[in-house]
Image (cartoon, rainbow, N blue to C red):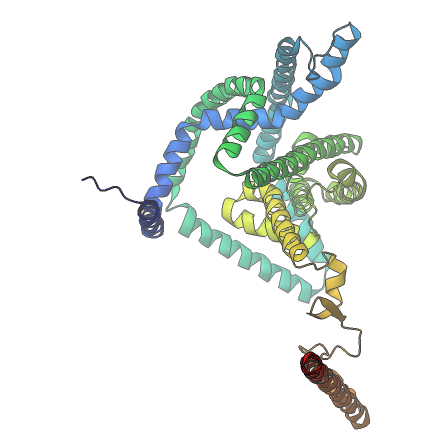
Length: 498
């Protein structure tokens, strides 16, 4: 006789196995997390070429869509091509191949322009600054001495004290941190120089992977949807697909908008630097453009870095650049940025700062850039879940309503401005500051109003309870009268029959 386990036993066995596996995984992550992180980093490191390719394809996908849908398909339709029942042209594959070629050519031209013009200019500017550091130091020292000679003795003493303290701390930092770790610094720099070759190879692999990814991106999306509907019910699968679309629209809208915005700001900074004859215009424009990728703090970081470079060379030019970059960032924040980005994240300034600080502390520079769209997705998901729960309880989802809400009872909203809203500490207690300056009569009057309001609410509750008890007693009395009438009618009928 074969013993076959029933369905409950199989379910319990699977549940116990999964629970035991999760417990072991949590233990391993908590106490052996470094080994797990190293293993994951090795796996990801071996697939860097694929990761780079997916990132390149994701960033260049809007460019390819624009070339394919707005240019090539219209040219084919103008030449007499017709669409099938699905609304697609018969020459779809040919159009896709041509659009991928144009997109990759555009990317190569950008990289070539970067390496042929921008990077040599940057290298030349950095080498000039390093070579001229003694002259800049002498110039700054001369200006500082001239300022000290013209200032008062107290100011001169304070400034010289601050300079000596800064020099001592810098010297101590060099002796304690830099010189003892000089060997490790040289080793790290040499390793990073060797890693450049690996990065170059991974970029070539990523370029090839990006071509195949762009060519088959619809099939990848179709496979993902097929798996979602295969393993989940329709509602869950629809929510998963909706969440993926939310992530895609948030990331692609924010990242592409930020890249375009930073390119325009960097170009405008370069043109302004050339017109105002500011030293090292390319270097400073690149600093302004790259730091502009960081939301909220980026413009300030770029402006401060540019001013610090220019103040060593020419303080007057540094002041001119400071005024120019303030005007430029005001234009970006009030006109250009909202025009390009729009409401791609939907976050307030507080949540933008919060997301930058949170993810920046975790991932560094990448967290400063990616933290805002990641937190925007989390914020949107929580907002949708909250609204769904409120709608299920038949409550309003308007945010402004809850600002003035004191409490909710039986689906009815009581507002803070309503005098009858006295429950759940709706009326704020008098602060110590106001209590200090208020007179005793006002305090007694407020106390009397509070007690009166509480008494009125208690009276209303007593009246409600009495009404309910009276209703119950009246219904019971009516039932008794009905019973009596029915009994008497039955007796009368029986007498008449006799």
